[in-house]
Image (cartoon, rainbow, N blue to C red):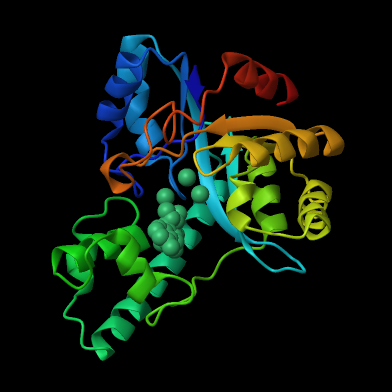
Length: 282
Ligand code: AMP
Ligand code: FE
Ligand code: FE
Ligand code: ZN
């Protein structure tokens, strides 16, 4: 069993890179990809412990982007096997993403404060490392008693239809795909089931548009995917000539229902052959 989608505390996971490697080794995973949002910091810190433990560690990243549409949606892109060290162009592009997050975070703090929530940017940045995202805001809101749990914090304040929502500048999906390709990586559509597109024609239109923009793979196995979704994305992968990927999207205590390797109640079990095929198409 392998896991090709995980997060460390360098983005919005709770495990340190070394703890994540220990956990993967204890579970006897045959390979692990660290796919933090917008940063390689977690992967970089995991290289040594993974090598010491003889674990096959895969470099990856996860990026938020906007599909061209219709429908215009936030899609998550995974990039695998990027050049290390990344080119100066790719690093500069990631720095822009981090800067736009910081700008969003400032506006989000302003909006929360205007609603009477006592929260300061330093409270939130204090618990983030390379990146401070909405999950960090959720943790602070829970800690301060403004929400009972993370879900409620998103429902009341942070989610797309919630009162304090502030949109973040995100690159177009075609730009994200091109940046991953230019960085030597394999662009893969993450957790398509989460897009929640009911109309199969619209869903296929979105996927074929991404394929035309250079997408090379699709995440078929994921903690959020029901069995019917796994079957559908398996079919669509074959239809559009996309490689299959899969992982738990482990975030540690930040998403306690998801277990490394096996997802939610054992709904994920990715065989090593998936990684071998991804390496072949790369
Ligand atoms: P950000 O990139 O800072 O805008 O935060 C996005 C992250 O917040 C996603 O990757 C999810 O992990 C998390 N997230 C987004 N919406 C929700 C939600 N409704 N409930 C819980 N977590 C969410
Ligand atoms: Fe996340
Ligand atoms: Fe994601
Ligand atoms: Zn993820």
